[in-house]
Image (cartoon, rainbow, N blue to C red):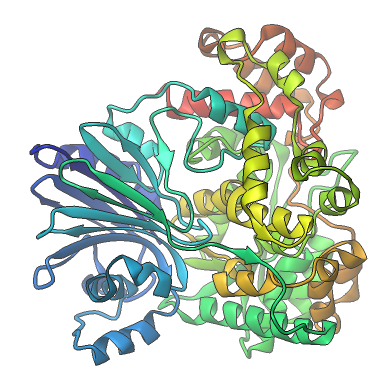
Length: 591
């Protein structure tokens, strides 16, 4: 919905609006409709608005309520804000707008920090309490909306992306060696609170942070996901009915809570097709749908039009198809990388970037199918893990990690070699999940950690780069809590996502339900040859890359000599991983 930023300076220093101005400039694409700033003593904050709810000036931010002594910047959407508004009005609060932003302000005054537990939505926000001189930061349970920060003994700076923090200045841009190990072990995922830059951290999903003007801070978790069976056992039919109803409610609220038209991304896979089918089931007609396709490679098709077209035809959607040639992928790649808040290895990031450019010309909001595979066990590695033996980490790592630790040590220069940190971290976090079975714990870890910094972050970054808000119904926290109670066999059966396939049967074409699992393909970035290979060679052979000295040159040369022989366990190009990180650093840190 927006871009937020701000700075709280400690020990009597005044707020720095010029610094906030520089930060706001790097958030313009997230919020092209309006900008505003606010300062009070040690606090300065700014906002770039994408108008979705209450399009009038009454929804502008920063929103300041002098009567309450509060100021707020907010990014996201609170889907249950009408219900909360009625509850707050009954408690005596009066509203000047119809925005969900004002509901957050009143809710914070009414319930304090516990207000976050009442919100159904995606959000990252900061509330400044003028009387107490305290700043409250919060991020939604599923981490759909980002919140980065830089904290030292002098000040806290926060923003919706790393680019804004870097523009504000005074940030340590050294590589965090432990985060680098995560980056190349978990295909681009660096679990919060770390990022690959030592001076930038991110608030963990389901967490909030409070700071005062002296720099004292407190961070706490306000939500924990539990993956345990319900007290009363449920039959398969009951699970199907319950998931169907919860998903339908999630899709409906993400369609209705907006003062602008809402469309849907339609890839041709089960997840996005089911969203469109459920919207139709809810009575919505003439739904705007959007699909992108790329050039084929000998090893892989570049589009899924053959699957998306029948879905669009069945539900009579207002369908838009876009075909992107490989030459355009390569030409536009640097600008897409420049919009990544962190380096993203998923080859579909550029696909979302190019698709979002086209979609933003038609709508301001789209629904997207991210989260279904992690929530309902749709990927091929889940059955492999389930069949393996040993400890949780012994069953997880061989099917998921991009590189084993010895290869990582071969890949990086001596200065960046560390212990097997990712194995330690993942083992610890899997063990901390509240799940009865191994697959329960894996899916809970995936939904609350890995997905946050892989597909969810990609979708937010690439859509918001064009002033387009993406909503993800599968990650409604009430649906997630319900689905995590479901027995794993109702997810793993029939190649994964069994219960979703049952819901879809009769609603969608059988060809979409029974097709092999598909991805968002950009074959030119997976099967690297020709101009893409030359492009990656130039990046990795550049003076900047050599002087940075992250990679061992022998390892780089090995990948360049035979890129088609070096893929990760999840079928990503290892050469692309190296080139993407270096390109991201050149476009965002070196600039």
